[in-house]
Picture 1 (cartoon, rainbow, N blue to C red):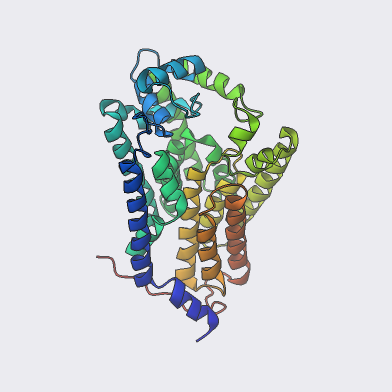
Picture 2: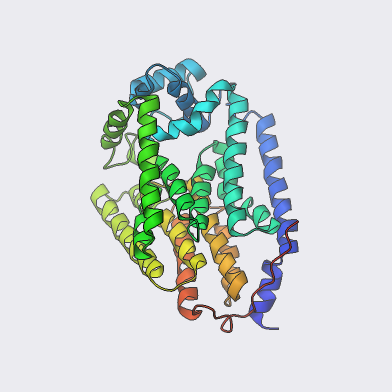
Length: 405
């Protein structure tokens, strides 16, 4: 038995993944329960909520108000937060997402804060897991998708990391043979436009004209619907709000905000690098990733590797990415594992993926970007060393799919 085969048996045995993964998920649940009992989750020690979900829930209030565009006025937003939650030490002073996000948050208006928190997490987590299952229809994959630390981090914050990763994953899964569904998912993903910049490059490279048309139509309809429902003035208000912080990506002090970003731009800014140089480095990285993605999608490379590169590159190429957005890497790894199960894993791949999983417990600084870069190297390595239809160069023959009951 080769070293690669032994490593795979130890690290990617599906029964063990389910067992160990369930243990990790249980550990997360215990940690959340402890924080909940100590009023450190959902509620601040003073009894007031103090999580990022504040602005998501507040957005539902603005969405159902007579003037939804007022959410983009910082003073109005702060006053609404103080009126609803009192004075907290949370740094949540602005809303700068496109108006179409309000379609996702509007239903929360009908629930009290704790129930809205639970409903938001349950619904977005279901989308995230559905995407993983669409890529890898195995119980072990679903369990494994719950174990990365960014998943736990997103739960603590009550943020939208699951929604972003889920829509991206469902779009990529549909890009195999359901172009209209793919385009629809990409249209919905425009609520976070920074994570959609690589998709046109990939679809153009593969001449996926139907998917491109579907994405354009879905995006336009989604934007128009937001204007019709929440008021056409929401779009100019959104543009003004973003333009006011486009260069620094924040109106908060540089160190405080940049430290929260896990992008190349954010890391460099947190180290004191000037905005022009940080932007230059980020743009260079984004251009490099775009070149890689475009090349892979233009060549006869398995769809799983193309999708893995696009998912991983999406995180690496975005200047505005937070720890909860790192859930996107799960989608990239799912496609990478899909290709490994179909054509065999190369030596050291399981070990590198496990080390990346461990590294993400340090969900700060350059760690997420480094992990993403290493995963992208794995994708390129497979594309070069394993020609289409080849499994002989791998340590294992194609795996037999697990029966799904």
